Length: 244
Image (tube, rainbow, N blue to C red; front, side):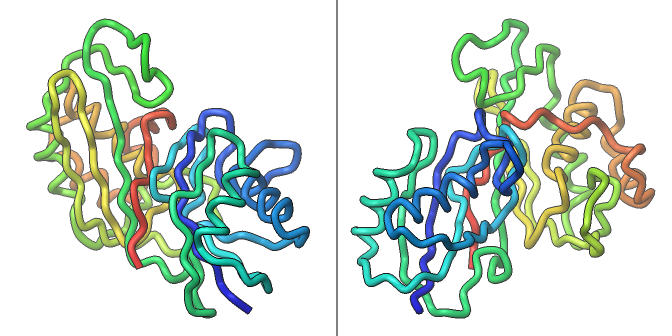
C-alpha cells in the first residue's frame, strides 16, 4: 500500500490548529476530508508538527497510506480542488512504506515575524506580532546564544502536556532585523509545546530592556515555566520546513 507524503502551505488564522478537535475546524480535518472527497476512502493523516491555533505553515509535512494508484501530479491537482483556499498542497511524493511524517522528522525550522514600530499594521496584521516599543536585536541575539545546544527546555514548555522528554537540541536561534521588521529563526530536532512562542516572548523582554541577556541561562537552568517570559501570540509563527 503506497505511502503519500504531502508538503502543505496554510493560513492558520481560521483554524484551531493542526490536530483534529471536536466541533472545531482544523488543518488535519480539512486534509482528511479532501482525501475522502478524492478517493471516497477515510484515512488518518499524520502531521510533522501539531501547529497551534492561528499558526501558519509554508512547509508542513503530512503523510498517509492508501490503496490508490495516482501520480504525484494527480494527487496535487485533486487535493487542491477539494481543499479550502487557505490550504494548499505544494508537493506530493510517493515514499517508502515505513515513512511517517512525525516519527521520521529529523529537524524543523520555524520563523517568527515581528513588526517593530509605534504604528499598528493595517496590512499583514494576522501574520506578525506588533511590538510598538523599540527592540534591541543585538541584545536578543546575545541572549539566544545561551539557549543553543542540547538542553532541558522545561522553562519554555506550556502546560499541560503529554510529553515526557523535555530535552531538545536547538541548533539555531537567531534574530534578523530588516528595517522595522524582525525575523526570529529557530531550528531544532524537536520542539516542546509552544516552545518557539515562549522563546520569542522571552527574547522580546530582553530586547525591550526588561531582562538582561545573561538571564536566559538562569531561566533555562530553572526548568520552571514561570521564570520565562510571556508566550508570544500565534499569528507571527510560521513552520517553514521539516527535514528528514
